[in-house]
Amino acid sequence: MGRNRFDRKKVFLDHPYKRKRRKAFVIVLIVLSVALLAAIAFRTVNMRRLRADMEGYLADAAGHIDRGRFEAARSEASDALSLAQRLRDDVYIDEIIGRIRLIEAVIRADGYFDDGSYQAARNTYLLAAEYASIAGRLGADYIDEMIAATESYISIYTIIGQADELLSQDDFESAMALYQKAVKAAAALSFDEGKELAAAGIEETEERIVAAKYALAEELLLLGDQSITIGDYSESIDHYQSALIIFEELNDPAAVASTEARIEVARRRIADKEQQEQQGPKDDTDKGTEGEGEIQQGGEDPDQKDGPMDPDTNYAFNLGLSFDLSALIDDQNKSPANQVRMGTAENRNEGWYNGCGWIAAYNALILLGNPKHPAEIVRDFETSGTVMGGVYGTYPNAIVRYLSDCGHSAEHVLFPQVSVNIDNVIKAAGIAILGYAHTKAAHYVTIEYRARDDAFVVYNDGFARSRSTLLGLADNNSGAGAVIDSVLAFIQETPEILFSFSLITIA
Image (cartoon, rainbow, N blue to C red; front, side, top):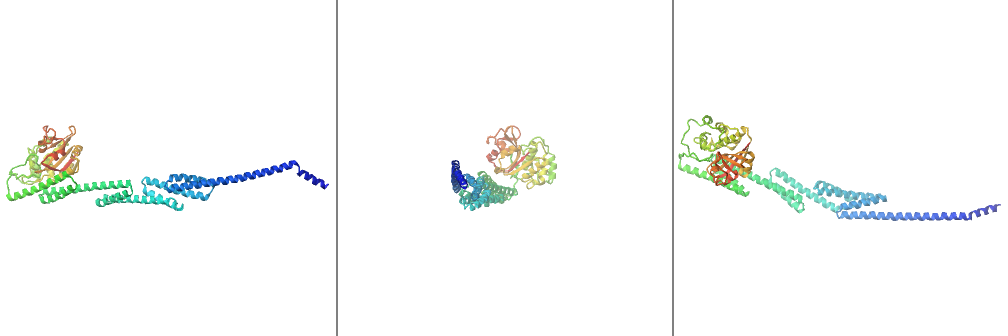
């Protein structure tokens, strides 16, 4: 019986069906093993390919960084990071992220640099330098170069800023030296923006220097004029000669000629004074000529005034004179203007001699629709506005003050021939009072700009009336005043006029 059981087991194992199952199992096992091995081999090959690609991207990124092509480097590094993440290689991921930070920092810094934000660029380049040190100094040469460049540019701006501060303090010499230093530094770096900015500073400094020299020269001219009014002709010449040197430095022929004319006037005054001292007292009944106003050199008037000459006496006398307050005065040598008394100097206080100042104010007020009697104007000037008791007429600032007290806006410019375009200024204002010196004296005139005719009307001026043909000016036979086309041309082309010393514009 036992044999039978063994035999049956053997028969079962040797059964063809069982043999097929074993064979199939072995085949499947072999196939699975081969597939597994193939998959492992494929994955290994793929991982190697991915790693090779990643390393290739990293190498390309490094090459771009070395050549300063950071936008391209960022693209390559991003591709490398994507592959590293697929490889799940934490070491490479950290390394690539570090390089991307470096690249991004440089790109931001370059952007700041291109925009001219050099301080921000410097700070960002310094951050990039820290990333570069972690990455084995990758791109360090470019970063160091850009840090040096930004620091150089910043230093140029610093120099320009220092120069600007000195310029604001009117330290022109020091400011100019710093601007010139900045120009040289910017040129060495081919830094056009810094060079242009420094060059603009130099130009402004030169303009400020010229303006300061003109201001000083005009102040010297004013001092010279003031010295002339008090009879200190030698001192006036000293002031004029100092101004002349400045105008020669400025290469201003018109100002040079005007100043030389002043010097010549002062020298003639000295000669006249010396001659009078040698000849002794001499009577002279000449009461001046038409067009002459203040600071005239006429002799003494034989007609003596009754009683003391003082403001109260003058006021009472002037009130007794009859004036048509709607009529402009166009000739101070005619009655009643020539009789108006101003000042306390004997024989030098009548309108024919020193009246052009109050007449200019009188005419201006009529044109402004606010007429005043000459007695009122003269009394105001006599409080603080006459020069040496009226001998040399009226100060310009007294006219300005009086017009302001009458409710008008009055602006004053000294020596306008070197500081403003007279024609344009008078056009803008409409009414003006011009003071000028001529070969015998000084004179004030009132000027009206008539927009409808685009012409100027000059009141109480013999030169403007007599020289209309010579100057090619407009018709002067149409009522009061002389019509001219250009005040500037009138001053420059009238031989007897030396220079203008005062321009008062009124609104």
